[in-house]
Length: 386
Length: 166
Image (cartoon, rainbow over all chains, first blue to last red; front, side, top):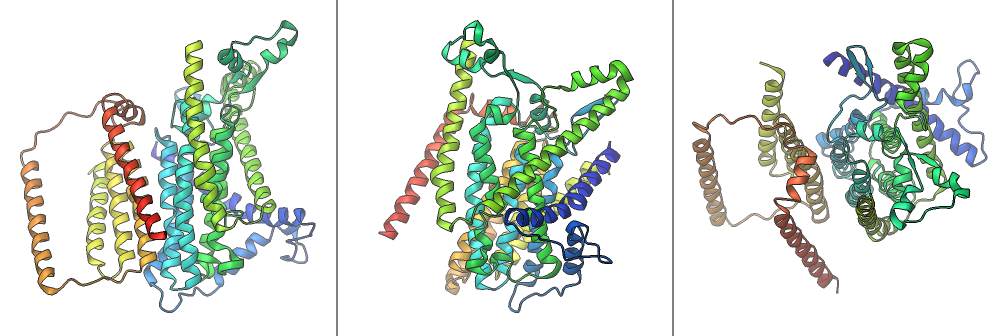
């Protein structure tokens, strides 16, 4: 039991920090180069070979590690050293509750591909996210610099504001899946539903037999089909929480140099940088789990895969095979969501600070409340019709 | 000593350390606030050990996160210069705080000495579903009343802030 937790933790840390984070820094450079019609990221080389820029992450790490670690004069030394850690730790431990596979029975033993299968998994993410604000706040305050200070003021206001919308935007999802446990949410999405049943239940409409294929059309039971507005709200709010463009006003370099991490160098700056990239992976994992069915394969539920493959190769092999398929499915969706965030990051220019705040309080928050109201009304109406 | 007991004493130590840090950092308001965060988060750890998961989560979200962040926000906007009370008043305040601390301590000791062993909490106690059902059935009137108070506070804050701007 304890050993399994350690193995899974080590595996997640290896995949997220050891594999995904460096690759994302490379993807970010390559994708921006593609989108801006440049060649990009081709200077780091070993013996004249550049490996399409894949050496750059390694070059980054070496550079950051050997750079001088400067603590500015007049800074609060303890808080200045503590701030990057406070930024990086929440980003890393958030992955504990995201399932990267379902649960599989091998005879007596059951393997669950999640580190901590918490009853309140999604709330854990919010609790950890509310602690993430301390990194930038402390960094700006402890640096004893005007630019840092302005950056940290912006960061604290922005993160506090978007936390409210973030919480409200997924209440509709709780209501649909009736759970806060992320593993149960993924299992609930491992089925399909008849899309037209909504119209029949709400308006009492039935289609003529010639249009039977529309009424028989089945969609995967994914969050994005059941709660499309919640997906847009959640994606916007959580990208603002991660402070990456177009929401990077806390570090807007055209106005306040580099914002809250102006006075950081070396690996301590690297920790801020890394926490944002790990944030991208965590966001991708969350969106995959809540809105895109997690590890599930559309139209092929776990029972179908195990029964189908088990028919030829035996149940034990089929279960292992299913585990592998689900993990690959999760990683593919994760990669797609990372790509989506990168594409948004290189498409949209930075919002002005007042636009960021107006968007949150005047548009996203009312919409998220309306989404809760409509979801509740629809659930009540469908229960009444059934 | 088993693992939960070890965790309990670790968290208890951190709670006390954070509380001491909050008082000791009288010249550095931000450091005091961060000590308060340590206390709040460690307290949440103890709640988890007790099985009160929802309270633990809200402890971190509301106290560890939102409230102290707001507090830091205020400190940043106003600076943390503090005004000393005149010496006479200061002595009075100190004497009153010592008195209150002794009373609270005495009350706690009195309540805890000879406290009967309680039965274990029922299965599912303190989980999201149970707390939600309790809030919206038995305590729905209280929930509505508290929400009215909060609404009044929000409107009041807006009125005060707007008067300053005008």
